[in-house]
Every structure is written in C-alpha cells, then in structure tokens.
Length: 142
Image (cartoon, rainbow, N blue to C red; front, side, top):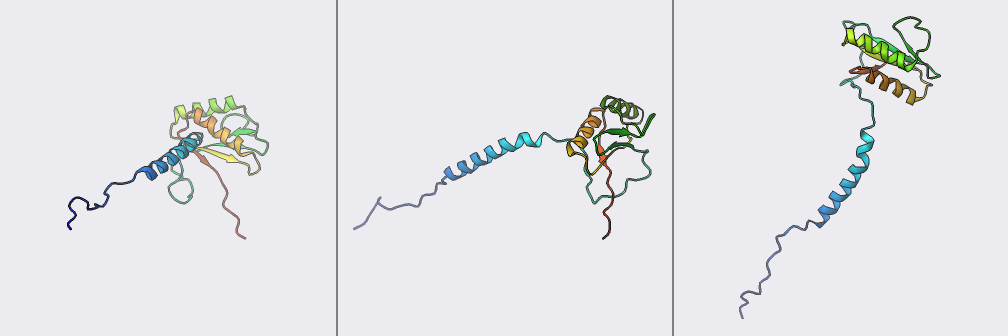
C-alpha cells in the first residue's frame, strides 16, 4: 500500500507571536523612560580620566555655590558678596559675548543641595555657556 498525498511535510513557517510580545514590552519600557532622559542639563563630559585644565586657555569664570545655596561669581565688583540669578546670567552673558571660548566652571560646596548646583548650571546654560565644568578636589590619601 502506497500512501501518495498523505505524507506529512515539516512546517517551515516562523511563529512570530512571541516576538510581537517582546516588541510590545520593549515599546512600553521606552515610552516610560524616554521622558526621564530629556530632563537633564547638557554638559560636555571628558572622554578620559579627569586631568587638570590646560593653562593655555583663557582664565575661567568660576561660579561658587556655598553651603546655604548662595551664588558667587569671580568677576565684577564685590566678589565676596552673593549675587542674584539675573546678575549672574547677565555677567556671564557679557563675558561670553566678548570672549566666547571662556571656560565656565562651577564650584559647589559638598553640603549644598544638589538641585541648587543644577540650578546654577541651567542658569549658565541660559546665559549661552556652551559647556560647564565642575571643580573638585583630589581625594585625600589615607
């Protein structure tokens, strides 16, 4: 007895249903995380280990945030007096107008609220600073 036509052939189709499930899960994850990624301050991060700033650049403008959250700028009159946010923005804007390549650095007290340092960085960004550096001290040897 010969069976012509009743032979079973292997199924050569790909079941894509599990792949659709995985894609939907990834879509939901990206939809949730995408708004969180856009709420940052744009800064240029170094591509290597932290090295000292080169001395051939212009003198940097240093913004200091003390432990109470007051802002200080090292240009203009009364460098030891806190400045308002509008004054900070106008002074940095005027420096960058005449010397666009002037480095802008932020020194934040280790006890100050992190949000206050970020606020200072956003003010500098609104003043037209293309990049903002952070000043730190090297760790103490124990």
